[in-house]
Length: 311
Ligand SMILES: Nc1ncnc2c1ncn2[C@@H]1O[C@H](COP(=O)(O)OP(=O)(O)O)[C@@H](O)[C@H]1O
Ligand SMILES: [Mg+2]
Image 1 (cartoon, protein in one colour):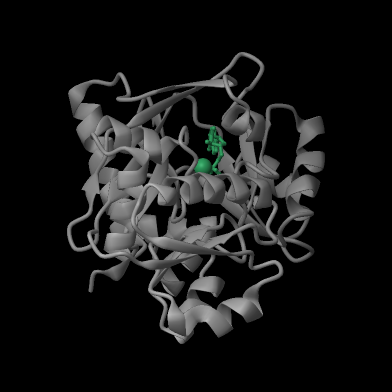
Image 2 (image 1 turned 30 degrees about the vertical axis):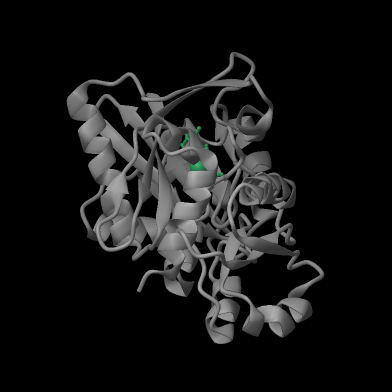
């Protein structure tokens, strides 16, 4: 992007991923210093009125918010009303991707492989633990419908742990998704571009011994997991997961970029979810994938701004 832009950098927010957002936003602020653009920072937790006031003087927003209130379409709606373009998917795409059961409906309608599951509504769908045991079985994975960073997620092997896991997820969301446990290697597939989104190299994630899965600490504590890029997979699996990443992006009607998580099981890759505003610290998964494709962190930030301004 050769033109100098006035960038609204949005970071912080009110979701459980606030701290992660501050890290992503901080890394982008640092990168923007090496680019010709000027930056104004807004925290939606306190600065929405200021953002509305300043919007007419700004060119583009870089939304570095994760989870509800930043990645779920609500802020995207405000920016649409303000006429300020941004780097990620729009209202509908963000809302669909944030809601795991809704996203899975879209994936299924496009024939994309997903885990068997059960969707439970708090106080409406009978005794949730009984239903999981009779309709899905153990081991299973319990997740709040609309969170990120593995907040509220448990892997349940024993019946005695099921009710507490459901309770923990229901504490965060009135809708809970329970999935069959998938054994296999974990891989994430990032996509970049507007009209013809292209897959970046895959990243394989190996949580450290202290972590049964890619939980919050495995994600953010340096050294708590190994992340290998490009993932060491057969060429055919690599191609397939890259293709599925693009199809997941398209199934949800996304824009700019996204990152979809997969488990490569014995029956092939299974799609878990798609992130419309993936983590953006220097060592986050999507920036690692971009680096492998010879795009350093400031170049990636600049590319996102360029895609935001494209028709
Ligand atoms: N069905 C599953 N089987 C096995 N592990 C899973 C399953 N679903 C999620 N996980 C583990 O939990 C992590 C977080 O789940 P994910 O659906 O990606 O939600 P989040 O939005 O919190 O990242 C995954 O990266 C993976 O390690
Ligand atoms: Mg994930």
